[in-house]
Image 1 (cartoon, rainbow, N blue to C red):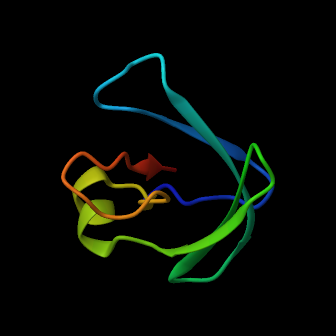
Image 2 (image 1 turned 90 degrees about the vertical axis):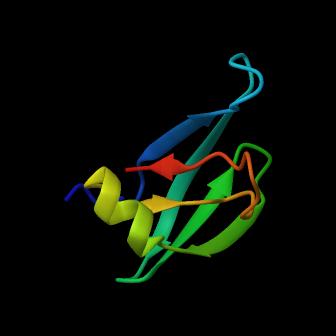
Length: 75
C-alpha cells in the first residue's frame, strides 16, 4: 500500500470542474492521521479513510470534508 510521505505535495481535482485543482503538502503524519498545508498556508488535520485506502491500495483522505462529490486526496 502506498503511503503519504512528509514533505511531499499531493494534488486532487474537482469532479465537476477538471480545471479546479487543490494541492496539499504533508507536514506531519501518524498511523491514522495526516496533517496537511494548502496553498494559502491553512493547516488541516484529517483521518486516513481505511475503507477507501483498502479499495485503492493507497492511503486516502478527504481534506475538504465528506459529502457526495467530495474530492479524495490519494497517496
